[in-house]
Picture (spheres, rainbow, N blue to C red):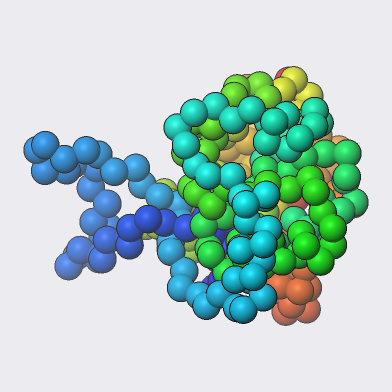
Amino acid sequence: MDRPLGCSLQSAPVIDTPASPPAPDGSDNDDPTTPEGFPHRRLKSFVRRAGRTTEGQARAFETLGPQFLVPYREDRLDLAATFGREAPTVLEIGFGMGEATAHIAGVRPEDNFLCCEVHEPGVGALLKRIGEQGLRNIRICAHDAVEVLEHMVAPGSLAGVHVFFPDPWHKKRHNKRRLIQPPFVRQLAEHLAPGGYLHCATDWQPYAEQMLEVLRAEPLLANTAAAPEGWADKPGYRPLTKFENRGLRLGHGVWDLVFRRV
């Protein structure tokens, strides 16, 4: 299923450079070798989406951006200072238009949510929701979540991570671009506090099966699911979005996975 994306509740993170076109033989041009003297480029798990920022979103950037946007920097973030309080912090990787993010922040006011998305209209939409709903426990970093995690978030500091409906990269030759891969899952696990959780959700069964395989193979994580198949019941805090409801009406399944840091 094509999706609007950035890893988002409806999308996937956003990429800084366009993907290379296929080679004449139909293979990828994602050869890790680069010309001498040029740095190696990390393979991104997302593509940049175009989109128009509405007047309401633009006003939200102007009025709420200074308070709720966190600039990216290669330096550890003081979470207590950033949110103005000490509270468990959840990292959300890709939130699309912010519908689910705002809902979750509203039903879990005791938690802080550091949310990464690079789709500008999506960031504007979440800022607008923050203003409309009076939310104070969200901060947004409009940058690649992988780099935010690596440079800005201290290991062992997160109470949870949400990865909802990341881009499934349907074509087999593109599967390596999927966000949930062993090295990144290890990085996520290392940034969770003991007992912290990783919650992934997808509506693409082949990706769900890969996610389950990768998460089960990570020794720092343990599955919370009681069912032998390994799928978790949808936690009550995660709402059904319009995008997800449309997929369910079309007969598409949705798979939740919830693992905890051991």
